[in-house]
Length: 347
Ligand SMILES: NC(=O)c1ccc[n+]([C@@H]2O[C@H](COP(=O)([O-])OP(=O)(O)OC[C@H]3O[C@@H](n4cnc5c(N)ncnc54)[C@H](OP(=O)(O)O)[C@@H]3O)[C@@H](O)[C@H]2O)c1
Image: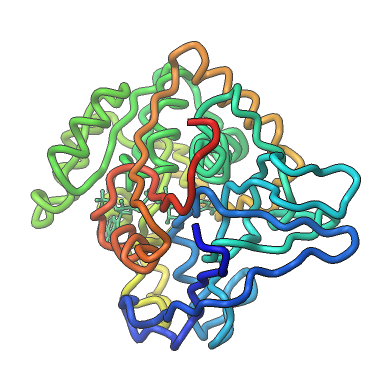
């Protein structure tokens, strides 16, 4: 890693699906921490679908990145210099407030998602703090606890099932005695879902012309819990297969990445919600920071006794950040998408 600080800044907002030229790399001087601050070097940068919303001019739940600003993002990082009594060089941290850059000055007084959380290498690979022990896994755990309310024997359908959130949803559902059904884009991804315990799968690309029927065949008793990571055609087909008293977790809308700034479509499924007496609820992990540690402990316990397996997709080098993000939005990732920026001291 250079002594300089390579950083990706937003060059312009995308028009539809983001392209690599939406960002440009700038080389800056390595910053120095002020009083009460720390300097950290990134080891793994996280690549997440929510970042699409941060580079949109449209209103979203969090402030967007301005043109010329460093792209927003999380990281697992190592403290290199500290001017804060609670942190020392060599400490490993996870934060959602790092940015797409090699070095960042961070303020340990920051609260919420952009605060600093300690990484314990004993719990798993340190990059797991960006996946099953971090935001995606914790999203799966808390959303299922609050909205899914799983009962043994129920059918749980998960879109983007081979991804960071989806893999964890499926395995928590199995752990609760449910039948887990995956929706993903290829036989390879569905084979992985089977390997980690999903009972059945639907290839939404191969079945594009008969998605509603394919989901019905995979969920013959209907869907009790629909964990929706994508919106789009998968959502429409799933909504036509709800069981009585179904719960629908609206977690993400990655299928809309290319149409993000267009107006929302109409509410097309109200009748199905009524007939099935279903409950649909939007979920945002940032509202649940108080449960973060409990969820992580539960997920770490599942991983420790072999009930949670996980696939990660790591690209090497900060120069790959835009491509890694585009891969994620187009399903070219297989597992949690990360970019390794510098040496992992725990590997
Ligand atoms: N609400 C919250 O608090 C919260 C927190 C974390 C994540 N999320 C959301 O959860 C979802 C999953 O996030 P993640 O981090 O786990 O990402 P991920 O699933 O690891 O990666 C994204 C996946 O989306 C699928 N995809 C891409 N375009 C698609 C399309 N047009 N139709 C259907 N599937 C498509 C791809 O899988 P295939 O190859 O199978 O298509 C891709 O691998 C995202 O929508 C994200 O925004 C929400």
